[in-house]
Image 1 (cartoon, rainbow, N blue to C red):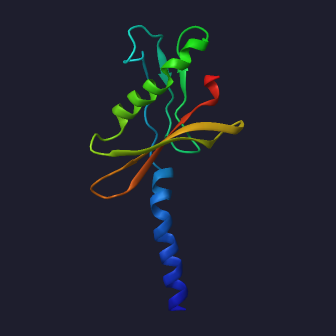
Image 2 (image 1 turned 135 degrees about the vertical axis):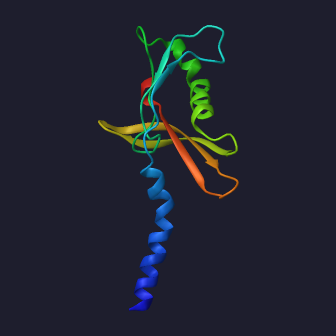
Image 3 (image 1 turned 45 degrees about the vertical axis):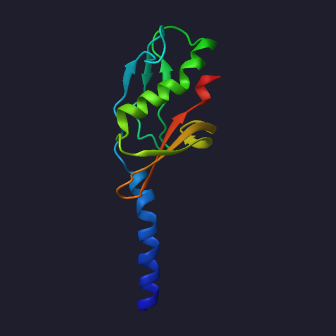
Length: 133
């Protein structure tokens, strides 16, 4: 009986960091132009938890999306990360991955992973990509 409780507690403790990340409160949405470009349209960031099942969606705020908007994608993601991720955290990975978004079975996301050097805990942030083609 004691062994079963110990195994259950160990499994629960291993799941807590992932559960805590999935349950983080949403980040507030906001608007900006591309801070790395001389001239840029205004883009809007959605209010989102930036998780695999609630990625940040970046959209053009005024007018129709243009093919040239794609050139702003990564710098807009970097700006959001600079605003919302503690400066002390170290970026360890950026990859494209699948993610979940309501109504989109084949969602793709840019996934950024950071490590808090004090706690060694990983923190992952997702940005929705399917609206950029």
